[in-house]
Length: 122
Image (tube, rainbow, N blue to C red; front, side, top):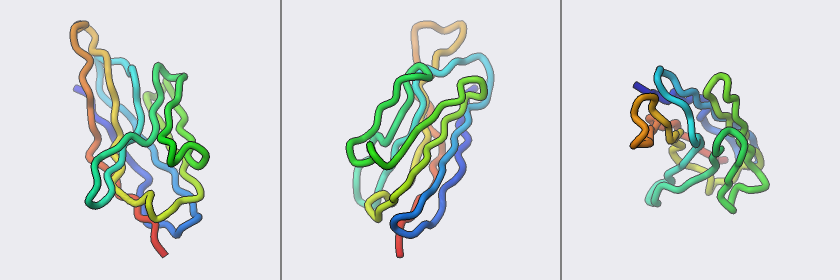
């Protein structure tokens, strides 16, 4: 019913920039929250940034001053602009959305993208 399509991952040198995009496709839903998690090698998946109700943003402390998440509510998309990238930013980045399903008010499913790899290395 809802799918998340991710793009923008790749290899970048420390100090470089990268832009991730995620679009939610399908029908019969609306977005409650949407954003990105990441999972570094050997580490647990963690929240990077998210947008709540298309207007409130949350960031992990480690990326607060370097990453910017923006929302295009009309297109059900979010973009994560990453700058001043560090090797510790390396990982698989997963788009995540919590959605409201029209006609099913009792649940708010969490949807995950398949992930896009970001590698920060010299």
